[in-house]
Structures are given as C-alpha cells and as structure tokens.
Length: 98
Length: 487
Image (cartoon, rainbow over all chains, first blue to last red):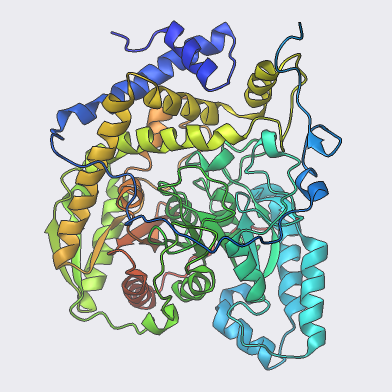
C-alpha cells in the first residue's frame, strides 16, 4: 500500500518551492514512498520517554558586546545579485497592482 | 619519485634547507593536473595564477617561516567558500557564485601559508556517495577509471590519490570524507562535531556537518587538522576546547589500547573481501599490543533511516536560501513565487530535490512527530550505544564501507541502494564522535578502508592508533594512473 499520494507530493513540492511535470511527480511519488517506507522501520523501536537529540554538544547562547563593527560595502553585497536597482535586490512582481 | 610522496614534514624541511622551492611543489601539482585530470576530473576550478604568485612570494621572501602548512599545495572541496574564487557546491544554481569572504578553515590555511591549488568536485551540495551527483562532471576513481571515487568529497579524495595535490579539505555529514578516502586508498578524518569551524562551509545538515582533512599519510592528516581546528567566534557550535599538537600522538606505541569490534560492523551486508582485510588489520593491532574485544552497537541498523530523515529535514531548511534573489541563477518569470519555483527546479539536480522533498515532508504539519521527532529520539539511542562502548574501550574498529569502490552508474537508479553504502559511517555523525579511515590493503586491486572511532575530542587517540597501524602495515598505496601520453 502506498503511503504517499501524488497529491501529497504536489503539495510538498509547493511548500518546498519546487515544480515538477507529471512524469517527475510519478517518479518522486514512488521514490519518496520507498524512502518513507524504509524510514518506518524506526517504529520498531520503543522511544517512549527518550529525549530527542537535536545537537550532540551542549548548546548555549554565545554573546558578544553590542558594538558596531564594519560590515560589507553595498556594492560587494550586491555583486552576485541576478538583478538589482538603486542599490537594492530587485525581484519580479510580488502581487498584482490594483 | 613525486615530491608529494615524501609528506609534509620532509617537504617543509627541504624548503627550509633550500633543497627545493615552494614553486617546485606548485609546478608538480599543475603538471600532474595537466597530465591526469582530463581523466580523473577531480577539479572544478583552478587557482593557478594566484597559487604561483603565493609560491613566488614565499620563495622571494627567503624566510623559512615555521607555519604549519608553509608552502604546501592543498585542494579545497567546492562547498567551502573562497573569496574571489568561484564556489559552486557542484550545483548549477551556484555556477557563477563569487564568494565575498573566506571560510574560517580557508583563512587558517592561508595564515599557515598553505597554497590553494583549486576547488574540487563533489556530489551537489554534498548529497551523494559517488560524486556522480555533481552538476558538472563525474569524478573517476584513480584506481580504476570505470569506478566511482566515492562521495561526496570524491574530488578531494581522488585528487590526493592521483597526486594532484599534497592534501585536501573535505566535509563529512554521513561519511563524505571517510567513504571516498576508503575508496581511493587515502587517509580521511571526520573530526568531533564542533572541533572545526563550519563558518563558510555551505550548510547541508547543520547538526552533522564537519570539515576535515584528506591526506596520503596519517602524519600529514594530523598536521592539517591541527592547522584548521579550533573555536571560532563566527560559529557558535564550534567547541572551546584547546587544540592539541596532534603530531605528538604519532609515537607508534599502542600497547594496552582497548579496541572494541562491533559485531554489527562485520555482519550481514559486508563484503567477504572487506571482512578479510579488516580481520587482518585487527590481528596487526593485536600484534602491536592492542586488546581487541567483540562488542555490540545494537541500534546500528536504525542509523540509516534516522539519518535520512534528520539530514534531509535540515537540508530542506538550509537550502531554502537558494531562491534566486541575492545570488545564484535566476529563471525568468512573471511573478515571485514562480521565480522561486523555476529557479530552484532548474538549478538543483534530482538528488538534491529528492532530499528537499523528503525533508519538507518530514517537517510538514501532521508528520513532524511521526518522522522527524522519532528520528531524533532514535539518534539518542544511537549516541548512547557509542557512549556505552567507549566507556570501557579506547577506540572502535571496523570497515569504513561495506564494499570497495563500485562501478559508475551501478547504483544510480535506486536511491536506497546508494544510501546503504553509508551504513558504517552514518552512525558516527549521528553520535558526533570523531572517526578516521585509513587504507588496510587491497581487495581485487581496490583499496579497503579501516575505520577507527573514538570518544568526543579523541582525535589524538585516533592518530596514535592509526599511525601505529600504518607504520606496521606499510601499505603506502599509490594507484597506477598514468597520463594520456604514457598509456
């Protein structure tokens, strides 16, 4: 029985900001289903009361003094930008104008 | 004999005594690249002009500085950002990316007067075990050009094995330094999580990624790790633990060393030829005075599924930054959402998309607890397995990979078969402990890697054990790859 449907794959693709044609959706559905099925063997283990490990070392906040330090010049920061205008990153239309 | 075979200590001595110049080493690197890289395809970008200039400055200064990497030619995996030297992560989405700063490890290499020869091929964004997932070219194994060099640091391992550089930096999220080192017959170290700064390492899975050295010998490895390790104000996950002089651990003395041999690492799914080599290596360690004992890491088989959930989840978040706005390739589109989707779909390869999809799924509403949180709990069990065994043992020893290098194309169609190749390296990343892979002979003409694992910050113990074994076993493996003219 498949665990993942093509509709789910389309939904996840949208969340991940990826687009696929119908052929690719089919392939990804099969492959993701296989991988998720493989991952389900984790359910063989009883993990009741086990703390999740997010990081192997003890993590703590690292602070520094709140002092202004030199930062990147604007032209440097923009040097890899696909598009720019007036010293800013430029993107296509975000929403329709009224 | 090629100069690189002499190793860092002798080469530095020769420069100091003016027997050779730094430029001679750079000449050797580029001559060898010209000779073999058309076949091996280890490099994505060369830094020749700047490297020759660096060597010339060293030679002209006439000063023999006592920096760790003085004049030594090094290759860099292409997911470490290098200022003004193209950095692609072997992805089309970054094919023109010109970094604004140096990664901390690159800064350290430059401070120690290492000379950067170029940027090395890899699986796209370090996702893969064969370097076939590179967006630009598949690197070949110098031992057999029909086989993969391993991955994801396949370019780094192949370049070292083929004698194109003295050594290289790689990164290891689930085995990406150790597995290619095993396949190419070189020495690769995955340091303790936090031992080396990740600042400027393009993030794949932030709780697992670690930068480390790939070298021809254990001694060179120790020197290179010493050069790049240490706490860093730009990486809050780097550990504030003093960096030892690792070379002092190279004594050859391991009498009484307590070696754990997990039965899971010599069981089902491990090639007989690999088992034979590992058993011979264990006998060698015993001859040197080590005490070997069989142990169990009972949760080993769950490491692979837990890893693919955790690493893909972290990757799906980390790779959200590639959106075509501030850098990278942008596809023409009429609105913003379409621009994101088209740029990412055209820029990323299939394996990267697969992992982003898996991670996004595992983190999505309604599935988070069932997959991501479950995998993190299993991670705790795996970590405890290691803690328990390492309470009473100094190192854990087993193979690095289940088989020697496989053929190009052999595992491309089935992601799960490809993933299974990382069975023995992945648990180490989940536990955050250090591990080294070093050659322990050949099986059917292909190198086999011996993996040694230690407690957190136990790199000295690994170097001590690995050096003792290396000196006793005397496998100095050099592939027979020749240039086109010599064929």
